[in-house]
Image 1: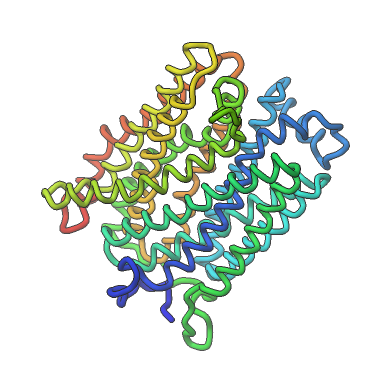
Image 2: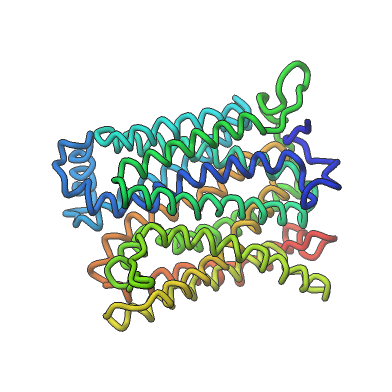
Length: 458
């Protein structure tokens, strides 16, 4: 079997032109994201509808966490506190990604980091389902998910040796990821609605266990000098003048991705709260569970991936080849448009139809289909040798900063009202486009990466 640490030389003839080890990694990511998306789709609603209504003694650490937040930020409404907890766990998840990437690059190897992370996810999900240890379990689950996420993405990036192939590989990977985003909230939300919250969180723990099993059975390994290639740290970092010049441009691209995701991340937090209170969620006389909106997000992303690929392939045949920076900028603009749609819907002040939410989802999911594969492809293609895992982990800090904003911004939801709140998020996403338009061209020229060969950078 092939070693994912080195780029594949024999991917021709494989399914969809992809390395045979790709699909095991993608399936493991799908189950990991099933668990993460399932938890995120329930978390804020669970906190508001159950945990914060029960006695604080029923959950270890709840009273202490609330007292800590209120000592830092003043008196917290239930919405503000629930949003803070949502942001904290999500920020911890993404902060754990570069930590896991660094450990995988320099100490333990990516294989061991992925296995340890999946075990932590399963244990944390089980503790959450139990109730009393919900908060410690939530933190353990988030940290484990971060370790799994960064390790798998770095292994996928190493399977490709050209930018178009890598970008298309990450687009397919995004499809598997969003299959989990679709099925996780659908399954966990239904179980929570019909049987109780603990069954929803229990399903997330089971999915983490399946991710561990899938990865253990399918991870592409090849012995090297008596050791598994993935069990050993990667080679030493190789610096060069060109690699050093590229770093500011990579940092700029990541900053734009961070801004786009800072707006997007509300989709699993206060967008659900707003939808539950201000959107007519009935279909044919039946009211859909609110967590299913996150499933719709995942399903729509899956459907948009082949549409996006077909559109860009048509453009390439006509001599138009937008590079990763252009795709990221376009995604920022689409994300801003999505929040302008929500602001327009909120202006009515009345219950609005599902059509507004669908249009919002269409725009922000189109943004993610552009931004996420382009960003990861750029990082894994241009990272200095030996730092791929660390820089992929740094890329995933988009989720950390976005989550910090998502949690803290809950304090503004009530004072500003939905209209002002969504307008701010539109401005955040739009600022990523403006940043790229102003700063990317001179940085690309400085790095000598503009218009070179078959891998256009902008």
